[in-house]
Image 1 (cartoon, one colour):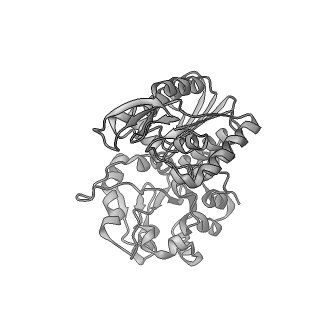
Image 2: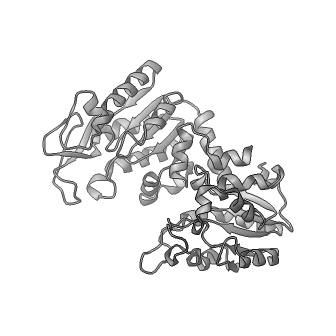
Image 3: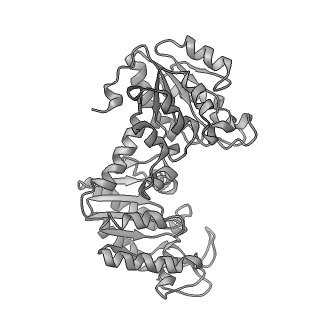
Length: 399
Protein backbone atom coordinates (compact mmCIF):
# COMPACT_ATOMS: atom_id res chain seq x y z
CA UNK A 1 0.00 0.00 0.00
CA UNK A 2 1.14 3.55 -0.71
CA UNK A 3 1.90 6.16 1.92
CA UNK A 4 -1.08 8.21 0.71
CA UNK A 5 -3.50 5.27 0.79
CA UNK A 6 -2.58 4.31 4.34
CA UNK A 7 -2.64 7.86 5.74
CA UNK A 8 -5.76 8.85 7.68
CA UNK A 9 -6.65 12.46 6.87
CA UNK A 10 -9.44 12.73 9.47
CA UNK A 11 -9.32 16.18 11.03
CA UNK A 12 -6.37 17.21 8.84
CA UNK A 13 -6.10 20.13 6.46
CA UNK A 14 -4.38 18.77 3.35
CA UNK A 15 -2.49 21.36 1.30
CA UNK A 16 -2.27 19.93 -2.22
CA UNK A 17 -0.19 21.21 -5.12
CA UNK A 18 -2.28 20.30 -8.16
CA UNK A 19 -1.74 21.05 -11.83
CA UNK A 20 -4.87 22.92 -12.87
CA UNK A 21 -3.09 24.68 -15.72
CA UNK A 22 -5.96 23.92 -18.09
CA UNK A 23 -6.71 25.64 -21.42
CA UNK A 24 -9.43 28.30 -21.35
CA UNK A 25 -11.43 29.71 -24.25
CA UNK A 26 -9.96 33.16 -24.95
CA UNK A 27 -13.37 34.83 -25.18
CA UNK A 28 -15.56 33.02 -22.65
CA UNK A 29 -12.75 31.87 -20.32
CA UNK A 30 -14.48 28.50 -20.10
CA UNK A 31 -12.39 25.32 -19.73
CA UNK A 32 -11.81 23.59 -23.08
CA UNK A 33 -10.02 20.49 -21.70
CA UNK A 34 -10.38 19.43 -18.06
CA UNK A 35 -8.09 16.37 -18.21
CA UNK A 36 -5.67 17.71 -15.60
CA UNK A 37 -8.47 18.60 -13.21
CA UNK A 38 -10.11 15.19 -13.52
CA UNK A 39 -6.76 13.52 -12.85
CA UNK A 40 -6.60 15.12 -9.39
CA UNK A 41 -10.13 14.19 -8.27
CA UNK A 42 -9.34 10.73 -6.73
CA UNK A 43 -6.74 12.31 -4.42
CA UNK A 44 -9.16 15.01 -3.27
CA UNK A 45 -12.00 12.54 -2.76
CA UNK A 46 -9.92 10.18 -0.61
CA UNK A 47 -9.08 13.05 1.80
CA UNK A 48 -12.69 14.24 2.00
CA UNK A 49 -13.90 10.67 2.56
CA UNK A 50 -11.44 10.29 5.45
CA UNK A 51 -12.93 13.36 7.11
CA UNK A 52 -10.25 15.85 6.15
CA UNK A 53 -10.43 19.18 4.34
CA UNK A 54 -8.59 20.22 1.20
CA UNK A 55 -6.69 23.36 0.22
CA UNK A 56 -5.71 23.40 -3.45
CA UNK A 57 -2.92 25.49 -4.96
CA UNK A 58 -1.99 25.70 -8.62
CA UNK A 59 -0.77 27.96 -11.38
CA UNK A 60 -2.70 28.87 -14.53
CA UNK A 61 -1.18 30.36 -17.65
CA UNK A 62 1.90 32.54 -17.63
CA UNK A 63 1.05 35.83 -15.95
CA UNK A 64 4.04 38.15 -16.22
CA UNK A 65 3.04 41.22 -14.27
CA UNK A 66 1.04 39.96 -11.32
CA UNK A 67 -2.73 39.35 -11.16
CA UNK A 68 -4.77 39.26 -14.38
CA UNK A 69 -8.35 38.14 -14.89
CA UNK A 70 -7.66 35.66 -17.71
CA UNK A 71 -5.28 33.71 -15.45
CA UNK A 72 -7.47 33.68 -12.36
CA UNK A 73 -8.35 30.30 -10.91
CA UNK A 74 -11.81 31.65 -10.07
CA UNK A 75 -12.81 30.51 -13.57
CA UNK A 76 -12.32 26.91 -12.43
CA UNK A 77 -14.46 26.95 -9.27
CA UNK A 78 -17.84 25.93 -10.72
CA UNK A 79 -16.42 23.14 -12.85
CA UNK A 80 -14.35 21.79 -9.97
CA UNK A 81 -17.50 21.68 -7.85
CA UNK A 82 -19.24 19.61 -10.55
CA UNK A 83 -16.28 17.21 -10.77
CA UNK A 84 -16.57 16.76 -7.00
CA UNK A 85 -20.26 15.82 -7.28
CA UNK A 86 -21.58 19.17 -6.11
CA UNK A 87 -19.17 19.73 -3.21
CA UNK A 88 -18.98 23.45 -2.47
CA UNK A 89 -15.61 24.89 -3.47
CA UNK A 90 -14.58 28.04 -1.62
CA UNK A 91 -12.23 30.48 -3.34
CA UNK A 92 -9.57 32.76 -1.88
CA UNK A 93 -8.65 35.84 -3.92
CA UNK A 94 -5.00 35.36 -2.97
CA UNK A 95 -2.74 32.45 -2.05
CA UNK A 96 -0.90 33.96 0.92
CA UNK A 97 -3.18 36.87 1.80
CA UNK A 98 -5.40 37.37 4.86
CA UNK A 99 -8.48 35.88 3.19
CA UNK A 100 -6.56 32.70 2.32
CA UNK A 101 -5.34 32.23 5.90
CA UNK A 102 -8.71 33.00 7.50
CA UNK A 103 -10.64 30.70 5.14
CA UNK A 104 -8.11 27.92 5.55
CA UNK A 105 -8.23 28.30 9.34
CA UNK A 106 -12.04 28.09 9.37
CA UNK A 107 -12.19 25.19 6.89
CA UNK A 108 -14.20 22.23 8.18
CA UNK A 109 -14.05 18.54 7.37
CA UNK A 110 -15.38 17.82 3.87
CA UNK A 111 -14.76 21.34 2.58
CA UNK A 112 -12.54 22.42 -0.31
CA UNK A 113 -10.68 25.72 -0.74
CA UNK A 114 -9.08 26.77 -4.02
CA UNK A 115 -6.36 29.41 -3.75
CA UNK A 116 -5.67 32.09 -6.34
CA UNK A 117 -2.93 31.60 -8.96
CA UNK A 118 0.47 30.97 -7.37
CA UNK A 119 2.25 32.66 -10.26
CA UNK A 120 0.68 36.00 -9.47
CA UNK A 121 3.75 36.11 -7.22
CA UNK A 122 7.18 36.08 -8.86
CA UNK A 123 8.47 34.38 -5.70
CA UNK A 124 6.76 31.15 -6.80
CA UNK A 125 8.87 30.59 -9.91
CA UNK A 126 11.99 31.92 -8.16
CA UNK A 127 11.55 29.21 -5.51
CA UNK A 128 11.81 31.67 -2.61
CA UNK A 129 11.78 30.06 0.82
CA UNK A 130 9.86 32.85 2.55
CA UNK A 131 6.98 32.45 0.07
CA UNK A 132 7.03 28.66 0.47
CA UNK A 133 6.98 29.00 4.25
CA UNK A 134 3.89 31.24 4.09
CA UNK A 135 2.11 28.70 1.91
CA UNK A 136 3.06 25.89 4.29
CA UNK A 137 1.16 27.57 7.15
CA UNK A 138 -2.13 26.85 5.35
CA UNK A 139 -2.13 23.08 5.89
CA UNK A 140 -1.21 20.28 8.30
CA UNK A 141 -0.08 17.91 5.55
CA UNK A 142 1.57 18.65 2.19
CA UNK A 143 0.73 16.60 -0.90
CA UNK A 144 2.33 17.02 -4.30
CA UNK A 145 -0.03 15.74 -6.98
CA UNK A 146 1.27 17.91 -9.85
CA UNK A 147 3.53 15.74 -12.00
CA UNK A 148 3.32 18.29 -14.81
CA UNK A 149 5.35 20.76 -12.71
CA UNK A 150 7.62 18.23 -10.95
CA UNK A 151 10.58 19.30 -13.12
CA UNK A 152 10.34 22.89 -11.87
CA UNK A 153 12.21 23.99 -8.74
CA UNK A 154 9.37 26.30 -7.70
CA UNK A 155 8.33 27.27 -4.20
CA UNK A 156 5.13 25.17 -4.18
CA UNK A 157 6.71 22.08 -5.75
CA UNK A 158 10.30 21.80 -4.52
CA UNK A 159 10.79 24.13 -1.55
CA UNK A 160 7.60 23.89 0.53
CA UNK A 161 8.13 20.21 1.48
CA UNK A 162 10.98 21.09 3.86
CA UNK A 163 8.46 22.83 6.15
CA UNK A 164 6.62 19.55 6.76
CA UNK A 165 7.83 16.56 8.73
CA UNK A 166 8.74 13.50 6.64
CA UNK A 167 5.52 11.70 7.64
CA UNK A 168 3.44 14.74 6.66
CA UNK A 169 4.64 15.17 3.09
CA UNK A 170 3.75 12.73 0.34
CA UNK A 171 2.69 12.20 -3.26
CA UNK A 172 -0.99 12.14 -4.18
CA UNK A 173 -2.51 9.28 -6.17
CA UNK A 174 -1.77 10.95 -9.53
CA UNK A 175 1.91 11.50 -8.70
CA UNK A 176 2.21 7.98 -7.33
CA UNK A 177 0.78 6.60 -10.56
CA UNK A 178 3.06 8.75 -12.71
CA UNK A 179 6.21 7.88 -10.78
CA UNK A 180 5.48 4.15 -10.48
CA UNK A 181 4.62 3.90 -14.21
CA UNK A 182 7.79 5.74 -15.21
CA UNK A 183 9.85 3.59 -12.83
CA UNK A 184 8.30 0.47 -14.30
CA UNK A 185 9.40 1.49 -17.79
CA UNK A 186 12.85 2.78 -16.86
CA UNK A 187 13.95 0.29 -14.22
CA UNK A 188 11.65 -2.74 -14.32
CA UNK A 189 11.01 -3.03 -18.05
CA UNK A 190 10.24 -6.44 -19.47
CA UNK A 191 11.98 -7.12 -22.79
CA UNK A 192 11.49 -6.52 -25.67
CA UNK A 193 11.27 -2.84 -24.71
CA UNK A 194 10.31 -0.51 -27.57
CA UNK A 195 10.56 3.27 -27.32
CA UNK A 196 8.59 5.20 -29.95
CA UNK A 197 10.04 8.68 -30.33
CA UNK A 198 8.41 11.21 -32.66
CA UNK A 199 8.03 14.92 -33.01
CA UNK A 200 9.71 17.61 -35.03
CA UNK A 201 13.24 18.05 -33.70
CA UNK A 202 16.15 15.76 -32.89
CA UNK A 203 17.49 18.47 -30.57
CA UNK A 204 14.44 18.08 -28.32
CA UNK A 205 14.94 14.32 -27.98
CA UNK A 206 18.74 13.77 -27.95
CA UNK A 207 18.99 13.17 -24.21
CA UNK A 208 15.99 10.85 -24.03
CA UNK A 209 17.31 8.75 -26.95
CA UNK A 210 20.77 8.55 -25.35
CA UNK A 211 19.32 7.42 -22.04
CA UNK A 212 17.01 4.90 -23.71
CA UNK A 213 19.95 3.34 -25.54
CA UNK A 214 20.86 1.95 -22.11
CA UNK A 215 17.38 0.46 -21.58
CA UNK A 216 15.50 -0.29 -24.80
CA UNK A 217 15.87 -3.15 -27.28
CA UNK A 218 14.19 -1.17 -30.09
CA UNK A 219 13.79 2.55 -30.78
CA UNK A 220 11.31 3.68 -33.43
CA UNK A 221 11.93 7.18 -34.77
CA UNK A 222 9.21 9.03 -36.67
CA UNK A 223 7.92 12.53 -37.21
CA UNK A 224 9.94 15.39 -38.63
CA UNK A 225 13.03 14.35 -36.68
CA UNK A 226 13.35 11.17 -38.79
CA UNK A 227 14.51 13.20 -41.81
CA UNK A 228 17.55 14.52 -39.97
CA UNK A 229 18.57 10.87 -39.48
CA UNK A 230 17.78 10.11 -43.12
CA UNK A 231 19.97 12.95 -44.36
CA UNK A 232 22.72 11.97 -41.92
CA UNK A 233 22.75 8.53 -43.58
CA UNK A 234 23.15 10.14 -47.01
CA UNK A 235 19.50 10.12 -48.07
CA UNK A 236 17.66 12.75 -50.10
CA UNK A 237 14.86 14.38 -48.13
CA UNK A 238 13.58 17.14 -50.43
CA UNK A 239 11.97 19.94 -48.44
CA UNK A 240 11.41 17.77 -45.36
CA UNK A 241 12.21 19.19 -41.95
CA UNK A 242 15.89 18.85 -41.09
CA UNK A 243 18.26 20.18 -38.44
CA UNK A 244 21.51 20.44 -40.36
CA UNK A 245 23.40 21.32 -37.19
CA UNK A 246 22.35 17.95 -35.70
CA UNK A 247 23.52 15.65 -38.53
CA UNK A 248 26.68 14.64 -36.68
CA UNK A 249 24.62 13.98 -33.55
CA UNK A 250 22.29 11.72 -35.54
CA UNK A 251 25.25 9.75 -36.93
CA UNK A 252 26.72 9.40 -33.43
CA UNK A 253 23.39 8.11 -32.03
CA UNK A 254 23.08 5.54 -34.82
CA UNK A 255 26.65 4.31 -34.19
CA UNK A 256 26.07 4.13 -30.44
CA UNK A 257 22.88 2.10 -30.99
CA UNK A 258 24.75 -0.38 -33.19
CA UNK A 259 27.49 -0.73 -30.58
CA UNK A 260 24.93 -1.44 -27.88
CA UNK A 261 22.87 -3.84 -29.98
CA UNK A 262 19.81 -1.57 -29.96
CA UNK A 263 17.72 -1.63 -33.15
CA UNK A 264 16.91 1.84 -34.47
CA UNK A 265 13.91 1.76 -36.81
CA UNK A 266 13.53 4.64 -39.26
CA UNK A 267 10.49 4.92 -41.60
CA UNK A 268 11.11 3.06 -44.86
CA UNK A 269 8.62 5.26 -46.71
CA UNK A 270 6.79 8.52 -46.19
CA UNK A 271 3.57 10.27 -47.14
CA UNK A 272 4.74 13.38 -49.00
CA UNK A 273 3.12 16.75 -49.54
CA UNK A 274 3.94 19.51 -52.00
CA UNK A 275 3.26 22.09 -49.28
CA UNK A 276 2.51 22.23 -45.57
CA UNK A 277 -1.25 22.38 -45.94
CA UNK A 278 -4.26 20.20 -45.17
CA UNK A 279 -5.28 20.43 -48.84
CA UNK A 280 -1.80 19.68 -50.24
CA UNK A 281 -1.21 17.20 -53.04
CA UNK A 282 0.22 13.96 -51.66
CA UNK A 283 2.47 11.15 -52.79
CA UNK A 284 4.35 8.21 -51.30
CA UNK A 285 8.09 7.64 -51.68
CA UNK A 286 11.03 6.06 -49.86
CA UNK A 287 11.98 8.29 -46.91
CA UNK A 288 15.56 8.59 -48.20
CA UNK A 289 14.49 9.46 -51.76
CA UNK A 290 12.12 12.41 -51.37
CA UNK A 291 11.96 14.43 -54.62
CA UNK A 292 12.83 18.12 -54.62
CA UNK A 293 9.83 20.31 -53.82
CA UNK A 294 8.20 17.64 -51.64
CA UNK A 295 8.25 17.12 -47.88
CA UNK A 296 7.51 14.15 -45.64
CA UNK A 297 4.55 14.82 -43.33
CA UNK A 298 3.76 11.27 -42.18
CA UNK A 299 5.24 7.78 -42.21
CA UNK A 300 4.14 5.66 -45.19
CA UNK A 301 2.26 2.34 -45.38
CA UNK A 302 5.42 0.17 -45.38
CA UNK A 303 6.75 1.98 -42.31
CA UNK A 304 3.36 1.58 -40.60
CA UNK A 305 3.51 -2.19 -41.15
CA UNK A 306 7.12 -2.59 -39.99
CA UNK A 307 6.69 -0.36 -36.92
CA UNK A 308 3.43 -2.10 -35.94
CA UNK A 309 5.14 -5.49 -36.09
CA UNK A 310 7.93 -4.31 -33.77
CA UNK A 311 5.41 -2.83 -31.34
CA UNK A 312 3.11 -5.84 -31.26
CA UNK A 313 5.89 -8.16 -30.09
CA UNK A 314 6.97 -5.75 -27.34
CA UNK A 315 6.42 -6.30 -23.61
CA UNK A 316 7.21 -2.70 -22.60
CA UNK A 317 6.35 0.36 -24.70
CA UNK A 318 7.12 4.04 -24.21
CA UNK A 319 5.52 6.44 -26.69
CA UNK A 320 6.54 10.09 -26.87
CA UNK A 321 5.73 12.08 -29.99
CA UNK A 322 3.54 11.60 -33.12
CA UNK A 323 4.64 10.06 -36.42
CA UNK A 324 3.42 12.95 -38.54
CA UNK A 325 1.19 16.01 -38.72
CA UNK A 326 -1.78 14.03 -37.36
CA UNK A 327 -3.85 17.20 -36.90
CA UNK A 328 -4.35 17.12 -40.69
CA UNK A 329 -6.47 14.18 -41.85
CA UNK A 330 -4.23 13.35 -44.82
CA UNK A 331 -1.24 12.88 -42.51
CA UNK A 332 -2.69 11.02 -39.52
CA UNK A 333 -2.59 7.40 -40.72
CA UNK A 334 0.90 6.79 -39.33
CA UNK A 335 0.16 8.04 -35.84
CA UNK A 336 -3.13 6.14 -35.82
CA UNK A 337 -1.37 2.93 -36.89
CA UNK A 338 1.02 3.32 -33.95
CA UNK A 339 -1.90 3.86 -31.57
CA UNK A 340 -3.60 0.68 -32.85
CA UNK A 341 -0.39 -1.35 -32.45
CA UNK A 342 0.26 -0.02 -28.94
CA UNK A 343 -3.32 -0.92 -27.95
CA UNK A 344 -2.90 -4.44 -29.38
CA UNK A 345 0.41 -4.98 -27.55
CA UNK A 346 -1.21 -3.79 -24.33
CA UNK A 347 -4.15 -6.14 -24.81
CA UNK A 348 -1.66 -8.98 -25.25
CA UNK A 349 -0.13 -8.32 -21.83
CA UNK A 350 2.41 -5.58 -22.57
CA UNK A 351 2.83 -2.43 -20.46
CA UNK A 352 2.43 0.84 -22.37
CA UNK A 353 3.16 4.37 -21.19
CA UNK A 354 2.11 7.30 -23.40
CA UNK A 355 3.39 10.77 -22.59
CA UNK A 356 3.90 14.14 -24.22
CA UNK A 357 1.09 16.49 -25.21
CA UNK A 358 0.84 15.47 -28.87
CA UNK A 359 0.97 11.72 -28.20
CA UNK A 360 -1.71 12.01 -25.53
CA UNK A 361 -3.84 14.20 -27.82
CA UNK A 362 -3.52 11.57 -30.57
CA UNK A 363 -4.50 8.69 -28.26
CA UNK A 364 -7.53 10.70 -27.10
CA UNK A 365 -8.47 11.75 -30.64
CA UNK A 366 -8.38 8.19 -31.97
CA UNK A 367 -10.30 6.75 -29.01
CA UNK A 368 -7.54 4.65 -27.42
CA UNK A 369 -7.50 6.32 -23.99
CA UNK A 370 -8.68 3.17 -22.20
CA UNK A 371 -6.59 0.80 -24.31
CA UNK A 372 -3.11 1.73 -23.07
CA UNK A 373 -1.67 1.04 -19.62
CA UNK A 374 -0.95 4.61 -18.53
CA UNK A 375 -1.26 8.11 -19.96
CA UNK A 376 1.10 10.65 -18.40
CA UNK A 377 -0.19 14.14 -17.63
CA UNK A 378 3.28 15.69 -17.57
CA UNK A 379 4.88 16.35 -20.95
CA UNK A 380 8.05 18.23 -19.97
CA UNK A 381 8.34 16.44 -16.64
CA UNK A 382 8.07 13.01 -18.23
CA UNK A 383 10.62 13.92 -20.88
CA UNK A 384 13.14 15.05 -18.27
CA UNK A 385 12.46 11.95 -16.18
CA UNK A 386 13.32 9.70 -19.12
CA UNK A 387 16.38 11.80 -19.85
CA UNK A 388 17.62 10.57 -16.49
CA UNK A 389 17.29 13.89 -14.67
CA UNK A 390 16.33 14.23 -11.01
CA UNK A 391 12.99 16.08 -10.82
CA UNK A 392 12.95 18.65 -7.98
CA UNK A 393 9.28 17.99 -7.14
CA UNK A 394 9.97 14.28 -6.64
CA UNK A 395 13.27 14.77 -4.80
CA UNK A 396 11.61 17.16 -2.33
CA UNK A 397 9.21 14.46 -1.13
CA UNK A 398 11.78 11.66 -1.11
CA UNK A 399 14.58 13.57 0.66
